[in-house]
Amino acid sequence: MQKTKHQLVFRKDDFEILQACLQEDERVSAFTPEVVESLLADFRKAKLVSKDEFPADVVRLNSRVIVQETNKSKEMELTVVMPEEADIKQRKISVMAPVGVALIGFREGQEVMWPVPGGQKKFRIKTVINDNE
Image: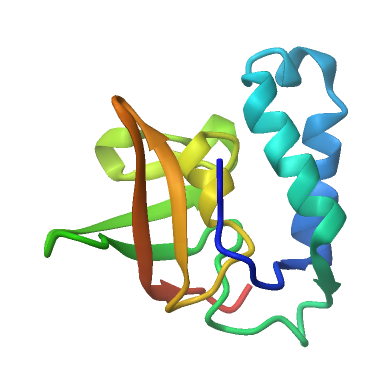
């Protein structure tokens, strides 16, 4: 999973939740090794900030995100959630899915790449909506 080079930002509380999730053996076994390694790599290079310091335009847990494939006009709205809350019919995607890992920590206007059947696609994060939680 490739991403453009930008400073990733995680809220400390989200970081702790995700770190705990990755330490539960039965949960980790449900994720592909590539996804786990990609998220761990993101953790190593991310800046951790408090809730008060967290930028409103950065993707975090429970963010609603509108993305657009860079060479197409169609947009998708997704919500990044914990694995047990994922429901593709409601456009809730797991933070542990390739698309969730590709989005979390990035901000509005940035481009990310994630694997899709047949290769990789590049998407621009058009809008990030974070409720005040």
